[in-house]
Amino acid sequence: MKITFVLMGRGLSGGVRVVVQHANLLRARGHDVTIVSQRLAYPRKLKSLAKRLWAECRARLGLSRDHLDSFTGRLIEAPAAKLAASVPPGDVVIATYWTTAGLVRDLPAACGRKFY
Image 1 (tube, helix red, strand yellow):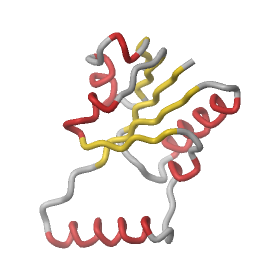
Image 2 (image 1 turned 45 degrees about the horizontal axis):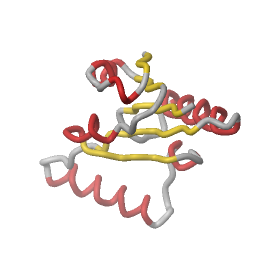
Image 3 (image 1 turned 60 degrees about the horizontal axis):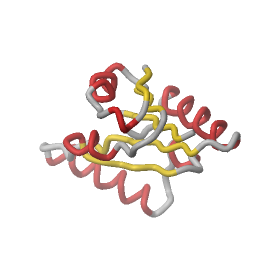
Image 4 (image 1 turned 45 degrees about the vertical axis):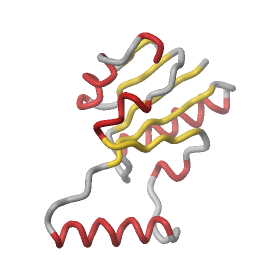
């Protein structure tokens, strides 16, 4: 079965951790699991932009990790405007947060049966 989880973003929250655990367990049972995650826009304030760039540099160098780093399947990160277009066709698509429920609701039927 092809299963897609739609996340709002990366991070160390417990919700992201639970989604990754479920996704890895489903993969262990033989399912094709994809996580589609929203890549947040860059902030406009200089201080916030500097913090964001520093965090991205640390992540690329392997100095910081989050829960999505432990996901063993396919991970798609897309900006908010292209998030819906990034969801692959499948059997099931799952909204993981109230802000992703509307996005999943509006996906075409080819993306799979919708759950929240």
